[in-house]
Every structure is written in C-alpha cells, then in structure tokens.
Length: 431
Ligand SMILES: Cc1cc2nc3c(=O)[nH]c(=O)nc-3n(C[C@H](O)[C@H](O)[C@H](O)COP(=O)(O)OP(=O)(O)OC[C@H]3O[C@@H](n4cnc5c(N)ncnc54)[C@H](O)[C@@H]3O)c2cc1C
Image 1 (cartoon, protein in one colour):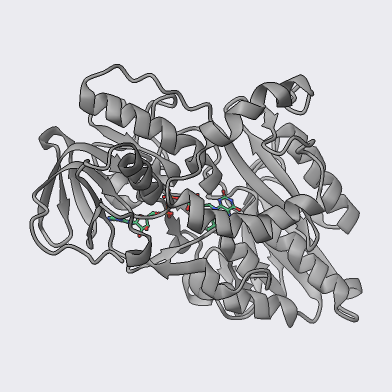
Image 2 (cartoon, helix red, strand yellow):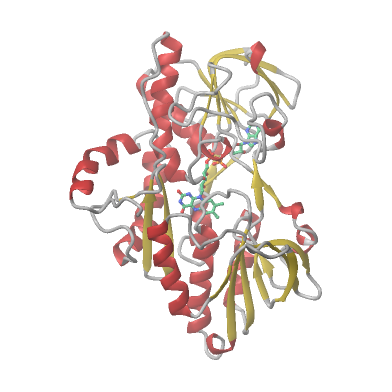
C-alpha cells in the first residue's frame, strides 16, 4: 500500500494532478509501458470513490462499502503519491503550486481533476439537500438518504431533474428515476398515487438519437411526464416547491413552479475553479482544460495533457470515456517525452449504461459522431437483462481489478471487434 510522500517532490518527469479514475488509469498504464518512469500523483483525498457505483448503491444494488477504497490502496506501485491540492497552474514555468505553497515542476503534466458540483448555483439547495424529500445520488454523503427516501415514499409528485451544463454520466439522472419508479410500483398503494415528472434543461431526453428513442419509449411505458428545456434554479424546501427557468422555442423565457413530495436534484457542473481561473482553461462556459480533441494534448502548452471530466474533450463525460482516452493520452505523452510526433487519436468513445429497471440496461455506447457502437456484439439500443448483469456484477470488479490497474483499455478491448460490429450493422449512422 502506497503512503503519501512528504519530502522531495520538487521535480517529476510526469506529474498527474488528480488521483481519481482518469489520473490512476493513466499512471498505471504509463508505469506498465515504462516502469522506470518517475510518475507523481498530486491528490488530496485519502479515499478513492467508484462514482459509477453511486447509482447502484443508491438503489441497494451494490453494497455502499464497494463504492470506495483507501487512496493508498489504489495508487499504482512505482508512483509517488503527494497528498495535497493544486492551487495554481503556472504552465509557462512548467510548475504547479500546491495549496500548502509547495512548487512542483514537471517534464509533462496530466490534469485529471474531475469536475466541480455547483450545488449553490440552485438557490435554497445547499440548505435543503437531505431534508423535506430533497435528495441526490450525486452526493456520496446523501446516497443512503436517497435510497431511504425512495423506499419510504408514500406517494405524490416525484420530481427528477437534469441541469443545463455538461454533467458526468449524462444518463444518471434518468437511471435513478427508473429505479425509483420500480420501487414506487412495487410498494402497495404508492404506484397508483404517484406522478413522476422528469424536468430536463435539455431539448431531448438523451443526446444520441437512437438511444433517445429507447428512453422515450421507457418513459412513455412508465407514464412518466417529461418536461424539456426546464432548468432548476431554486428550491423552497419547506414549501416543497421547485422553480424552473423554462426556455421553449418561440416563447419568452418564463418561470414555472412545481410542488413536489420527492425531488432528486442533479446540480450544475463545471471545471474546478482552480482550473477555470488558470491559463489552462478554455474560453467560455465550463472552464475546462483546453485540449486537442484527437490527441488529449493542450492546445497552447505542448507539455500539458488532460483527460476525463475536467477536459474540454467534446464527448459525454464518463468513466467509459476515460477507458478510450487514457491509452491515447499515454501513447502521446510518451511520444512527447521522446520528441516523436503524436500519433494516437481518440475517437470520442464513451458509454452510459442506462439502467431502465431493476432487470434491464441499455448499454449506450457511442463516439464523436454520436454513432452507436457496441462492445458486446448486440444491438446496443435495446434494453437487456444481460447488460444489467454486466453493469451490476461485472463492471464494479472490472473497475477495481482492471481499469485502475491499467489492464483494460478501449483500444485493445473494443477495436478488434469494430469491423465486425460495423459489418453486422450494429453500429448505425444517425440518419
Ligand atoms: C452518480 C454518478 C454515476 C455515474 N455513473 C457512471 C456510469 O455508469 N458509467 C460511467 O462510465 N461513468 C459514470 N459516472 C462518471 C464517472 O464516475 C466520471 O466520469 C469519472 O469518475 C471521471 O474521472 P476523472 O478522473 O475525470 O474525475 P474523478 O474520478 O472525479 O477524479 C478527480 C480527482 O481529482 C481530485 N482533485 C480535485 N481537486 C483537486 C486539486 N485541486 N488538486 C489535486 N487533485 C484534485 C479529486 O479528489 C479526485 O480524486 C458517474 C458519476 C456519478 C457522479
């Protein structure tokens, strides 16, 4: 088990900021490729979170204890863990200053800091979360309360929201809703007395046409009301009222208030302030690290790379995306260190296991062209029990034992199957 280093972090060949899913995957793959490399990980937290497990744990499908492990246990052998936070990026000087005031310089920097959940962007939410039926599986601390609230629900209006910003796991706001609806239907007297509403700031349920058609069918089958272009801006916890900013085409923007008995909130998200206010940030909303979409290299600083939620890579933010990004980043980072041209390209691969019930998942995989692909040689747009088993039983194991160890990556896993998948017509172009 790695212990955090305390001295001598002045300079490292590779400095990775963030020891979450992306940072650890890159560190493991780098050290597998070149064990002699000097790799340091700057990470403040003593606990590593398997965030994909939060929805499962929030529905009793995965023991809560399997969603986290000590950071020391997941730092790859050979890497130096510096327990601390990045406070300032100085890319012209090739260094990062920590919150403790320490300067760490690098030959190559990898930014993998994830994103920031802006709970306070919704008026009344920070005080209300966890009370008066207001819950969220996007907060690790509230997973248990979310599950208890769903199970104890006595009927009324159950409201689920999706914000206007990019979010991690774009399908998660719906997954929790479909699971909750199953619980309501199975609880005597509750299903018939419950009105489920999904309020999304987006113009459709899911951004990929083929998968959107599937989830529209699921919502209709369940009798779930969908309100598009509804962005949650305020909650009044004691009154149990949610206020939405509604921007429908051809109409003046207006406010709509909906009374709820249960409210599951997904907050607005953006790059951490430390990144957004640094020279690494892209101009405009989000403040993401501005990288080339093919190579993961920074557009202005050749010795800086980024992946995962913090990056500007224009794909859906997910752990699955990291599986596609990490091998590309690692190949290009090593080329950069060696002075070779950057040859590896990322195709935007991402995935979202859309849990549509306690026995079905739509394994929604796609790329930059929003073209469905399948790693499993089946039509990915269909709800499947087999994919439910993969999501709930296989993926948690794969995460801890393969992904974090740098033993599984998209190019090796998926690429050999792509020609076959396309030949079988399983990967369809959007019409
Ligand atoms: C509820 C939920 C459900 C999800 N479901 C799925 C799913 O089913 N499938 C899927 O593929 N993905 C899913 N995801 C998304 C997935 O978990 C993320 O996309 C993934 O964890 C992103 O990895 P990352 O390395 O970019 O960020 P993270 O894993 O969040 O890691 C970022 C790390 O940076 C550290 N950090 C923060 N600030 C600093 C700083 N100043 N200095 C140094 N370090 C810092 C943090 O402590 C953290 O360890 C889900 C996420 C959530 C929240």
